[in-house]
Length: 208
Image 1 (cartoon, rainbow, N blue to C red):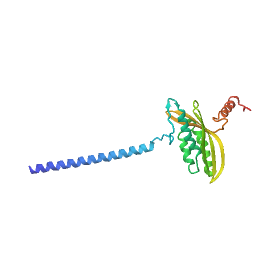
Image 2: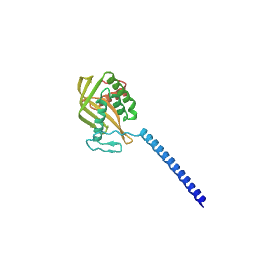
Image 3: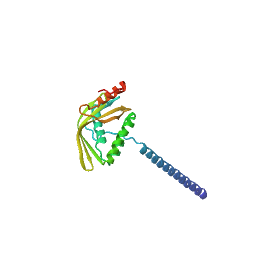
Image 4: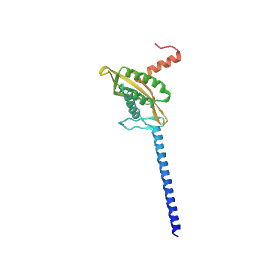
């Protein structure tokens, strides 16, 4: 009887040890799986760009967005494009290009790449102070008028009153930049240039 009891206790201990080993192995596998999932999420996390400070409410519906949303995003994109120094020019260019419309990416990449190279090579900084905004809601364009200041090294090189237009496309529930260029107070949305280009394409001649 004593021998049988001893054998039973020994078998119970072995079963307990086996159970603990299986539980430990399961715990290790769970930790490894969790670590793998964390790495996967970290590598594919999605960043949604919104203004750091939202000054007014806005809405999106279908393929339309509110005027307030266009204004907020235009102000934010203008800051990325125009409030720059040689040290942040490359980073802000990459941030801006993350949110461009796919069909316009190549053109904007070339334009911003050339501007970034100029800023870095010439040690130039710029700051744009927005004074007024004009919105073309149907075309999803915003014209920002204000003062652009330019520094070379630590010396102020220029200051001018100018206007920039930012165009958007609302695709798949997301607002993409499709256009960013300097215009003028007389033609804030740059429509005169667009009409001229269309006339040249249609007639093959440049209007006088």
